[in-house]
Length: 65
Image (cartoon, rainbow, N blue to C red; front, top):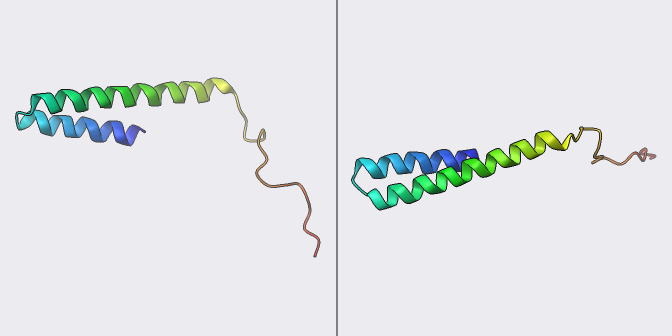
């Protein structure tokens, strides 16, 4: 998510250098939205308090040949 925000920020800077003000404003707005969305997801994951032991991806059944 942050990679996309950074990509849109760089695209915005390139567009403003070439004089494409409308495209620069649009890509900057998209970058800001993506950054805040990633920030909200990060804070949500920090506040959830989930532990690595909460989810068991591997079953506890022992392999018996």
